Each structure stands twice: as C-alpha cells, then as structure tokens.
Image 1 (cartoon, rainbow, N blue to C red):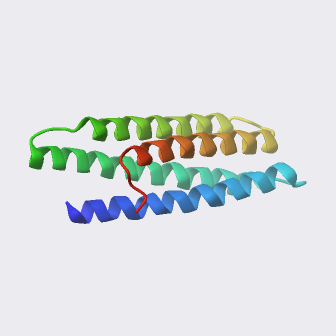
Image 2: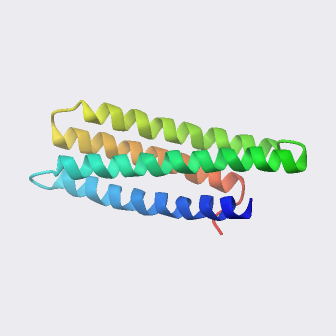
Length: 132
C-alpha cells in the first residue's frame, strides 16, 4: 500500500503542475490575439487523464485500507466524493469546450473547468489534511 500512497501523492503534484500550466495557457489564449486551440485541448486532456489516474489510485487505496482496517472511514468517502465531483466537472467542461468553434470561448470554458475542479480538489484534500 505504501507504493500506491506514494504514487497517489506523486500524481497529485503532477495534477497541480498540469493545472498551473493549463491556467497560464488559457489566460494567455484569452488575452492573446491567436489562441492555440490544439495546445489548449492537449493540456485539458493531460489534466483530465492525470485526474482519472489519481482517482483510480485513490479508489485502490480506499479498498486496500478498508480491507486492512475492516472498515471504511467516512472521511475517506468525503474525500473520494469531492474529488469525483471535481473530475466530473473537469470532464464536462473539457467535452463542452471541444464542441466550440470559437477558440477564446473554448479557452474560457477550459479555464473555468480547471479552476472549479482544482478548488474542489483543494477542498477534498484539505478535508483529509493532506498537502504534506
């Protein structure tokens, strides 16, 4: 389980890096003259893939720890549900932005998706006391 915990923690920081890169890219796209729609789409895809991987690792941790302890703690469920909602929001905004023909509008949607999902993730991680 320690390996999975370490991997879950590592991917968490990759999510943060991807989110920061995406926010910077989308802000540049919004204020610039010619947004790079392809780069924006790829950043959002990388961000959502990292979120998916981390959710899978988190669910493995919950099942593994529940087996070891013999119970599922409510705080684990709160953390998982908050982060699942964040991932769903990121995917919804990503899918919606793909259908947009106006690059700046797509960048705005992607930016909103990343910001909303990251805020939820911060809440979910803070709930379990983990940023260390």
